[in-house]
Image 1 (cartoon, rainbow, N blue to C red):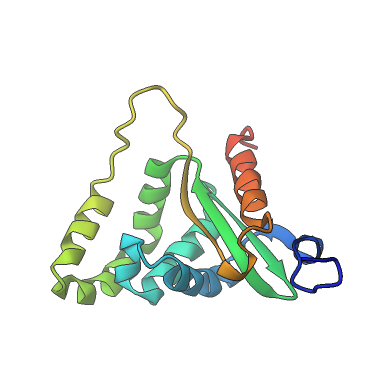
Image 2: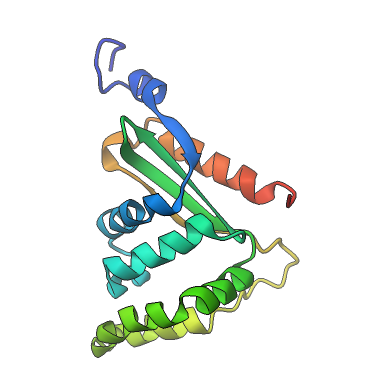
Length: 166
């Protein structure tokens, strides 16, 4: 690729901006996850549930969500939790009833029972003394893979997760 090519790595990086996601981004992030992470178990609960989860990720003091965009188009995102137990507790407290209403219709598919059970009984099995921070969502548009966008998003999210609490 050359600098004259609008799709070149150099031009992609120059045009990308990075920022914290906001609640207004939740719908775009939920759809982005649905489209770009087909293997994610939580995806089976549907786009409305994913939007609710991403709204919580964007607004919780127990999470961080960074986005990369160019000309208003989402190129990728990376989300992490400072403390998964606290995030899950807050999510259930603030969004539990709405989440339940969104999930119940999906439970007619037996494979989703396992996904629900794992989500409700989440336990960090790592007893090594590692910090509780965890990356839980990370995806980049296939058209910009290899340009460094994902690497930058991951690095920014990890830096935010490692930063001392304000």
